[in-house]
Image (cartoon, rainbow over the protein chains, first blue to last red):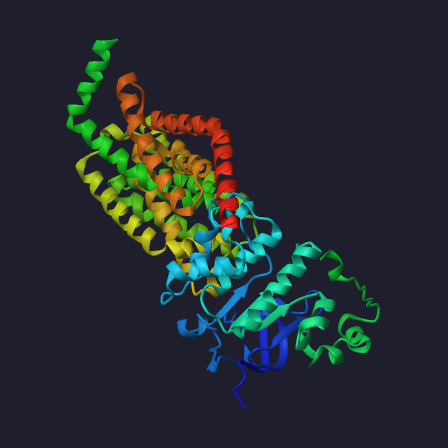
Length: 249
Length: 291
């Protein structure tokens, strides 16, 4: 049996004095698409940032790709190069003079051949025609695809997204989702994504982590997205509105 | 008129004018480079605060009978570190804190300068600069700073872009965000300190910011933006100094006026250039789709 890509045991993370993550334990299997769901302020972004060493943790154990993270969270470059992370919303200045191709090149690690890797990823994600455009000139859907190109220009094993569909219209969200699944199939990527789109989770994720400071439940979507579990996670007045993304195809 | 012009151009043969041009060229490149990043990180007002703090450094130096050049660099660097710490630890917004520090430094400088027994530096020189009075010994730290700045710029290019895009994204790619932020503030402080002699306290923020604003109007990539800002900084410094010699006007305001003129000209032409770029981008995109 292969060791898990990510193993977390009894994790504790503080923000100032407040204990934001308390006693969280789970494992991510290679090739798995895992959704992290929970109400606002549940500590989802804090958890993924701690897992990637972007925030220090104050208790428990994190093993990323077999490498135990120190409390300060500093990752060796060899491990970091195999992981890509996209924050919830980029703090990108609308007047930033940065061309798409120039930006994607920055995703390369030192061992990556930029001359072949950059055109290849631009083709794979169908954004080659945007390569001379400024990031600030892109639509929401185009920007997400370019960010995905930035993340995957170097071969990775784990992609971590913090609400990747925020701000996208349903059609662009669906296209982005399909692109992500295609990459997962072709490259055997493991994905962990924070999301509020429970329909998408039900359709394509293999595993769900329900977080509200503590891990309330985890398991396959059929089990974790039951009305009882969702009411326990989001509160008694939780209502699920369903809509069909396929309508826009 | 022609005799005025030939007389002014004869000034170019004079060593003091050659030193001034050399100094203008160096500070222009420095200001353009650091300014391009300062504008992206919204640090323009920081440059203004550092300029006024430099006046305080000069006042302290005069009070202690030291050479202002000696005290100015460490003082500006110390002030930049203090500002960064206060910005991190205070609950005040950046603009309010900078305004507070800026006004306090200016007020204290005026009190200190007016308490000095005899004016050893004219107020006009301090406020608007006197690049013509630059000496070879002033040029040495400028040249050193240029070498350090350009070397750091090349080494830290990836880090600077990623931090400007998003600090968290930069950290996820292994960039030491805090270290690079402090390094940039330190360089900004040093560039402001060495440029004070050329353009003075009042015009320093414009001197740093305007070339970057002009370059932004013309740039379609980060690399072009930084190179253009440095080039425009250098060009306006040289043209401003020549204008100062021909029109017999103070050098600092002439350099900044030249920067403002180039910005105005670019702004007026930017619409035309944007249309041309949009056409070229559409052609390239359709060619890519077609191919």
